[in-house]
Image (cartoon, rainbow, N blue to C red):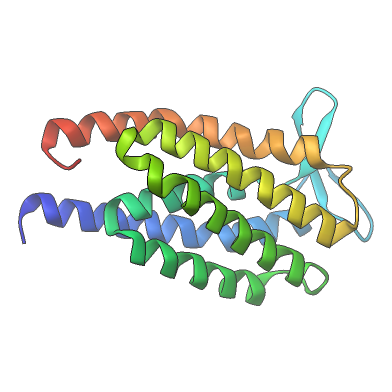
Length: 186
């Protein structure tokens, strides 16, 4: 295997591990960490002035970006496998009251992310990651909030919190794309 292929696979597996770790972290955060923990509800964090969101939003936003990078490094098959494994992991790790909401939100948002990212990736990595993550985070927020709490009260905060993580990751994606072009990894 060439150095380029080895580097791509190594980075791909690192992105895959990070993606997988986002799932238990999101589930743990939502029930255990926040500036406010609502009785029989989520732990919340401030994501913008006057906006609160369940604390797991940070990891969900990051997971959307990492899924795109798994696909970029390891291919579509690995990305689909990661989504399916992630849904099982989400089912297994989510608090009992949130199992269905967490699993379906994860599965549907990651499939939506994949559906947008796949055709756009050849036209520009940064735009593909941004667009697919935006679609994925909206789908995740709508499905999770409705199924978990029967309400979309936290929707603006959910979207804002996930968007912060996507925006924080975009400089890394931009650097990665430039480095890939320079090293012939693109």
